Image (tube, rainbow, N blue to C red; front, side):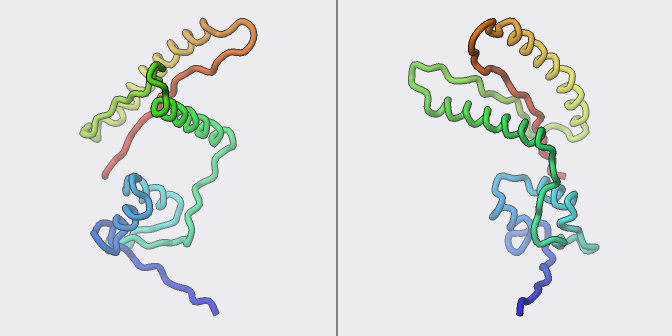
Length: 159
């Protein structure tokens, strides 16, 4: 006979027997607050009246996405991975591929929406200039080489 177990309610923070400790152990590098938001959104956890977290599902399965979305994200990951691989394994005489980012860890939270608007305008303008350049240099005949850039928004909130 199989025994059904009731999940333990966990404190959010703490060194032992807490959600934070589980997150550190099983998802290092993933922001805990982002994980809580994702699990809440999926209906996998809830917060109890005394501020603890309770599991509502035994397994977490992310919300479904379209095949086109998954294909696009996979393409972005593949492009980033091959750039990193090239830069790590290139010969001394080969140039590294452009791989930079602009990030600041102490932006005022109320500036996030301003940044989103800034990125929509300036990021789009930058990508349009890149697209114009790429179009002007497109091979007229035969095979070409795949070139481009990917720009994405980085945001982690600890609230």
